[in-house]
Image 1 (cartoon, rainbow, N blue to C red):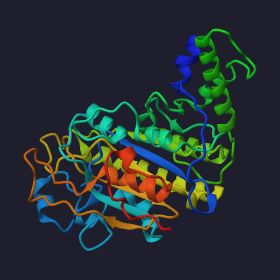
Image 2 (cartoon, rainbow, N blue to C red; image 1 turned 90 degrees about the vertical axis):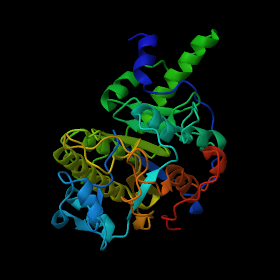
Image 3 (spheres, rainbow, N blue to C red; image 1 turned 90 degrees about the horizontal axis):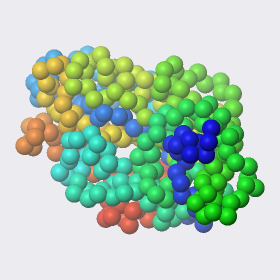
Image 4 (cartoon, helix red, strand yellow; image 1 turned 180 degrees about the vertical axis):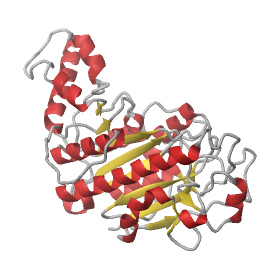
Length: 386
């Protein structure tokens, strides 16, 4: 493989700007804290995820796809989980699962491409930023020197919130292939007089070093689910086991754009999500890292309250998102959706700005200043225990 092809394949494997890191403001007790982001690609339907089973308007708007009241897993006297999320009940009962309702942003964009760009960069609907919110965060308060990478993206090449020219993220589209490619990189003592070539060599050396440090080959007693998402969770657990100081792992579960035949499709996806999250907890408990890990879902948008004519739902705005971890204060957060006050596009009014979740990560999880990164003050959601 020549140098040009290696760079194309590997970063894909690593971004081209690798900078030294001064110290990061550490949480209490000096521990390292991990963030695991799970992107629900396509826009998950929050109303059939956290089901408002006591709301007659929900059933009126969805005569063919609403989750029957007797199938809902009640969390309180008004709302409950989709039946395929049953594995998450153990997290709920342990008070380690928070569900944040009605998450969106003002003037939501219903284009997949543009809306996920807004979520990735933490911009307003009218702003165009060229760096992800995590990349900007690490630029403002860099992580400790010697960490293998800013973050690891498992199972895809989209850096998302880790994107931007200054990113130090590694993508593991195929972890085994990445490790094989890394061994083809130039040796650590390779040099070049030409500045451009020297830069390429530095990138290759960084890729090789990151791969070596991210390879744990840890054996788990945890049984990981079959399928793409289960494999991604297994890889995430291996990255965590490597103890390379990586602060972020990003996973993705694809297929939530449920315009047609939503019931069966979303059920399968939610089952994959629930089984994957439970396996991730089990692996992190084995590693002694559950209390130092925060897991959070996100997506470009939700779905409309009213079903369409194809047994599905079209692009909407607000949705529900999961936050779990050993230090999460479980419960329902945000206001329940009001189906009697839909906007001009047929969507509910959002109650929680998505940037409040990011402020929660930055301020409550990592102890960082959030207002500059998020370009304004967003009050954190108080769901993390001290």
